[in-house]
Image 1 (cartoon, rainbow, N blue to C red):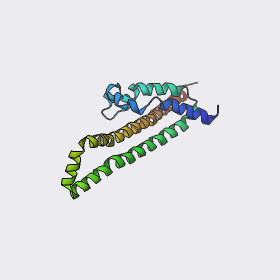
Image 2: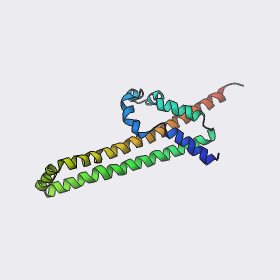
Image 3: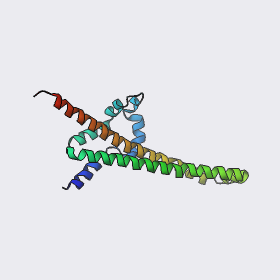
Image 4: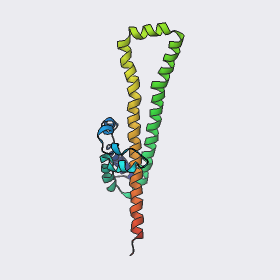
Length: 168
């Protein structure tokens, strides 16, 4: 297997541990969630079952792939964050600005259109609100992958330093 194929296989194995669709579930039922207060949030990460599984997967990863995986994780997190920001602007800011403009220009007409088409408008408003939430969940999960990689690499560095400190 080529290095490229091994790298992407390992990336997919790690990324699959952090699916965006489970974010809402984890907000309420992940043991790390309730430790997500204060200035030390690493304890919450260490308690997260997904992070533990990622650490186990990373333990079997050849060391020469770790820097590349960390770079990929950070690039993925930046892209997911940019996508979330773009969707938030497109799906929230622009519609609110347009609604405010129309409401200011023709308030009675706007009220009549809304009240006359409430059954059609409500699903559109829900979709406009849920789409950025979905992108936020993906962005958060992408950041979790990057944070997990950073924490894993810090642990590896500490272990290597500890071995160097041992006599003999």
